[in-house]
Image 1: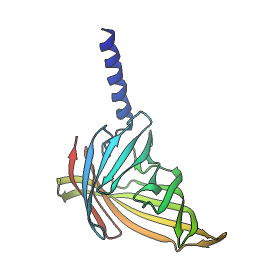
Image 2: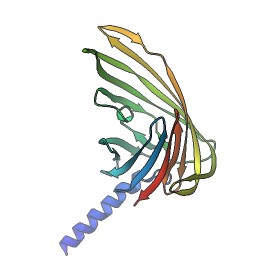
Image 3: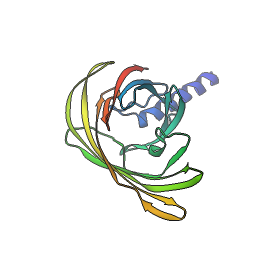
Image 4: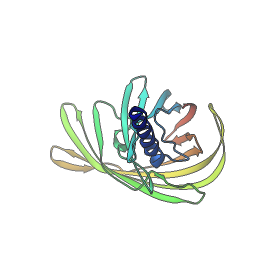
Length: 216
């Protein structure tokens, strides 16, 4: 009897954990795996799997044919906060990490007309011709939900909120003790989120990502 009571409490606690972080347009469910097809400048397939769900956050495991790495997220009443933006897609020769995160990447509620902003402090290092270089800077994103429309992808057709973003990145490179500002970059992007599914399509910098499947 005690065993079953303990098991029930464990299941209940786990349920409360994902329920607190869960989002209608960005589901946070332990073990759920999204597979995406990426095309354009880069053509490949990758997957995202939710792991380590608690009442304070979760981890997204990003997996390609070359390997995998984890991206940490935090959740609170305002929405979902990505803690590892700088780690996304980096190569072994180039180490970039997030030093701080401000604002939510995914707000708690979606509606047409909603606008928000978030930013990341970044720092990194790499070797060039035997010389070590360091970079520091900031990435800032302005986002707005501009429509709710039908989107067709390999996984099916979904009614989704359309989120348009503008991301500005400003970095400074230190070479031999001298700081050299790097050219600022500004990228426009569009992402679609469907209820109960999450991101179904994203377009940015000549790269398109489309949902192929969702394994629950």
